[in-house]
Length: 529
Image 1 (cartoon, rainbow, N blue to C red):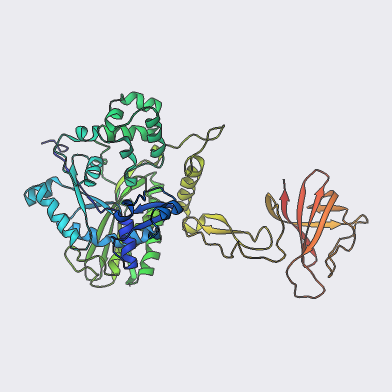
Image 2 (image 1 turned 120 degrees about the vertical axis):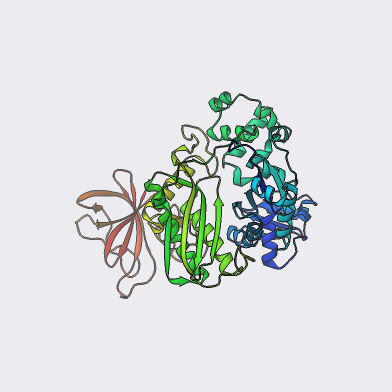
């Protein structure tokens, strides 16, 4: 028998999962009109909200105008992942091998399980009942291919074997973006382009020759074309994954706290991605095993459409361990929902790896517009994540706007991937704050501000120059001062006779400098261009 023949995939979909998780956290029922917002737009909403016209992508104000009683929550992937753990555990009791595409959606291989239970319908009923026992409603779809199964799960259908292409033919082209777990970030642009070209259904897209799609569109368009055609997708490599990629860690002392598990998960994620980077590989499917002191095992397989980053890996480890340690995972396979003893060992096992060089980046620059989150911005982030995986999480920091008087104080560095919380409130009132515009470049170079006689210009306790500036020396090179403004005192000093101040000077080469005077010495704090 052909190993690919008769392969069936079952998708388990929990409708409106972000809204369900938010309602559970707030102690309200999902029957209420609920909307989950991300970046000021509706990311998910409950059925009650949809009945009055609330839709995904709407702005908050528009959604609230349609439904004044709308209960609004901020998007929280950690909350969604933690509360989905009991659902995963319930499905795992029926079918041991599960893959989580995202919180709210998982898939299982259905052919052998269906034969064991006596048919796909019986298997689907068992899974729905198991999920319902956790207090969550679920729908199940079965098909030959994963993409078709995910779509059919939204309507609770079973696509007969060999009819995936016929089922997809009449589906709207927008179905290519209906599931973010199976969609590239640039997929909405592709769907918009296909719509403007008059292609309205997946069947019409599938009728296009594959060679024409590959030559006229992006690499993701080829993937989307294969999905629309119900062509079997790329199968995992049959070659064994090198065991050196596995990360095992013996916890000493054993872990029984959620914060300790989250910290440990970040360390192991960084180690895993260091090994992947050394092998020039990226991971798209990862199994996380947690073993207690008494031998109880808790395993989950996580799948991602794009290669996992260190942050994404650490998040999934935290979701899994947090759900287990908190005892919200229900009854685990072969044991109780909560661990019977502290966690003694963690094992990260890459199940599916790909070549990171196969990623396609958009062309930008030279007058071409760049979409938000794409092009050089996305490429730069991928590069920074790779550096972070090689050198450690704290090795890459990004600037954010902060509060302060001087330009250097108004920029703070935070670790890439951490919450971007400034150490000082940028919107607070800062006395003696430097007026705009701010310097284009920041610096901290020693300088000398001299008068016409070559003596150093200082700042008096009253906030004025001792003599008129005539020259600035940066390093050993002198520059004539054509114009100056200030000084502007700021802060306080320990000595009553000393003062701190800033001044601006225009040099003979048309550059402008921001000078800072502290402890009777001048430094170049910024350069205006």
